Image (tube, rainbow, N blue to C red):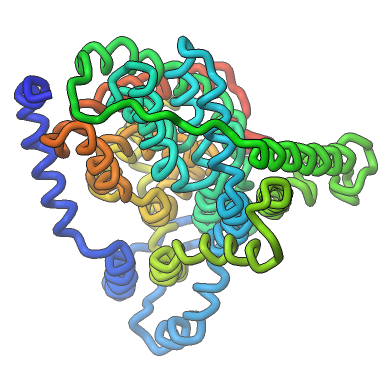
Length: 508
C-alpha cells in the first residue's frame, strides 16, 4: 500500500486541500441560514435595478420581490412555521424511515443481507457484494455500518484481501447510491425538492418519488457489473496478497429463529404484493384513479411513501414475531423511535433549507435566473447530450466539497430545474442527471458523511492507511461508474425511453 500511496502522492495532496477547504465550511444548516439571509439582501439589490423578465410560458412580466420591506418582513414572520411543516421532503422522509426503522430494529434487514451474501457462490461473491451494497441503499445508512465491514470479513474468510471486499461493498453502497431495484428514502426526498423547484415554473407540477425508477432499475445491474470488473481487474491486483494481522473469522449463518422470521416476512410481503396487484390489475380496482382508472396518476403512485412504510413495517413486524426479536408493541415503537433519533440534525437542516427555498421562490430570483440562464444556454447551442454531461460534471464536482445529496439538491434544484424546464427538459430528467453526478464522486469525497467511518474500517486491516489509501483504492470505481452511467444516459436519450412511470425526458 505504501507504493500505491507514493504513486498517488499528487492525488493525496489535492485531496488534502479539498479536505481542509471542506472542513473550513460551516455546518450545512448554518450554510442554509446564510443563504436565506443572502437571498433577502439580494432581493433588495435586485429590486433596485431593472431585472424584470418576460415569462416565456405566460407572457407576464416577472419582477423581483423585495423581502427587506414591510410586506417582506410580514411574510417572513408569518410563514416561518408553515415553510418548515409544509416543506415537501420532510414528511416523506419521516414516514419512510418509520417503516424502515421497524425492519432494521427487528433485524430483518441485517438477516437479508447476511442471507444474500453468504448463500452466493464464491465466483459470484464480488458481484453479490456490490449488488447487495446497491440494494442496501433502500435502508439508508445500513449498508455503511453493516455491509461494508461485513464484506471485508467475508473476503478474508474466503482467502482474499479484505480491503477488496470492503471496497466492493463501499462502491455499491455509496458509488451506486442512486441505483436500486426498490424505492428508498432518497427517492421521495429528492422528488420533494424537485417538486418545490418545478413549481417556480408550474405551480401544479408534481415529481413522483418513482419518477426515475426505470433508469435506476437498469443502473443497478450496470453498477454491479462495473463494480465487479473494477474490483477483480484493478483493485485486487493492486492490493496483492493480504499480510496483515487480522485472521479469518467465521460468519454465523442464519439460525432457526432467523429463518422462521424470514419465512414470516416473506409471507407478509406476498400478502401485501397480492393486495397491491389486486388494486392495480383489474380495470376498476381500488388503487387506480377513481375517475380515469389510470395507474400513473393513481392513489398508488401518489401514495408510494405510504407503501414504503407499510411494506417495511409489516415485513419487519412479521420477521420480529417469527425470529422472536420483538415481544410486544413497545419493541416495535422502539425501532421506530430509534430511526427518528438519527434525524435530529436532518430536521435542523430542513428548517433552514425550507426558509431558503421559500425566500428564493417569493423573491422571483429563481425564476429570473432560470429565464436568463435558459437564454444563455440557448445561445450556447448545446444539445441534449453535452448539456446533460456538463450538468453531471458540475454535480459531481460540487459533491467533493458538500456531501449531503439533499443539501446540494436543495441549492441546485431551484436554479437548474426551472432553467432546464424552460429549455424543454422535464424536472425528472434533470433530477436523474443530478443523481448520476451526486453518486459517482461519493466514494472519493472526504465530505461524505460516512467517509471517516470507512477510513476507520480500512485501518483495521492496514494500520498506516489514511485518506489517500481510500482515494487511491476507490478512484477507479468513480471514473468507471461515471463513464458507464454517462453511456447509459446517452443510450437512454437516443432511444427516447421514459425514465420512470409517467416521466418523460422532455416537456410536453
